[in-house]
Length: 406
Image 1 (tube, helix red, strand yellow):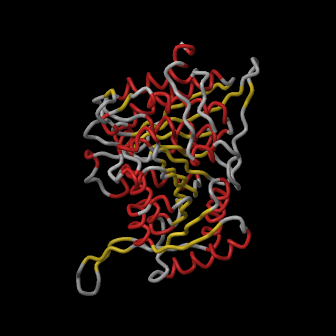
Image 2 (cartoon, one colour):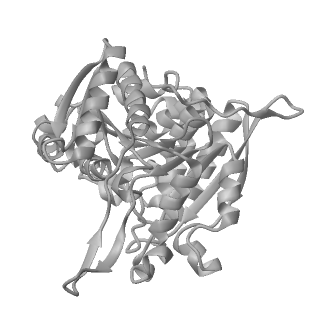
Image 3 (cartoon, helix red, strand yellow):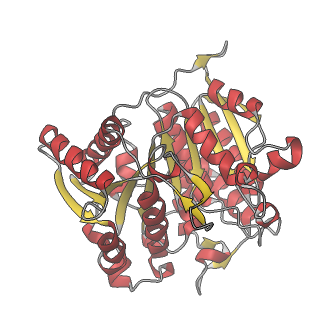
């Protein structure tokens, strides 16, 4: 099979995002240690959290790709599937069972599918699937979220932006994940002195929270093109004034990285006006949530983009950035590539298994080079396939000996 595939896959040069991921994981993260079995193969424990909507479909495919790539590089996996989100609510009445947290903490890495759906939209906040995801991030202490947005040559025409704007875009959003307005207190809904309901949240960051995410961003930029843009709202928010002050102070430790600052409203505009000006972006939780989704659409589909959420030393959380897409769940229409690429990030950032990760990245490009497309990235002249068939094509390409040039 490999010989036949060699005639169909043309080498492709990886953008900087992919090249950066092949290098040593950025400080201060440490990859997990592995066990070695009697046959001399490395073995890792992976917790699978399929979740809701299309989550089970894409996680199942990514699991198969992980196993195939690992087997070719002397790596074995022990998988444990646990409920989270709406699936957990239906099963045990809470969005994040204690057993799921324990399994995640005891594993070497966690692969998540998607969370949420119409079925639970009217639940009280503590019983919403999304609450389980926030609780999981907090439990794992994954404070740094890395979200690449790269316009691959094969998909430049899938972008809603003009070709000349989208072509060559390759940026990384580094989002602070466990602080800010999503976790700050006080928060709640109360009745004021006029008898009117008032909802309130707190945007709060301590200096150490800003410093640690900034260091990750500087290290990431150093491994890419050496440009870092810090996004804030320092003209209005005190939390952003401190953010800018701390990031600016740390820049002295990274003289090889060019630091700039931008207000979030301007950053949102510049992402669609001239996205190629960005290399690495660092920002807070809520701004990162919004800007990374905006950046994802430059690439043509949110269904193409992976993410890595990392802690100082514990297991990382790896997930596609798309939602649960309940409207197409179970219809074999989902794009599994974001989850497959999340598995590649799991191998690199979580386990340090770069050769196996490289096989997966090459296999994704191989399937795209052969013209296979799910509905979200389909264009005239390509072959429309479903979720399962796209996964099968990636699997066929995993064992190819042709690697994209780095």
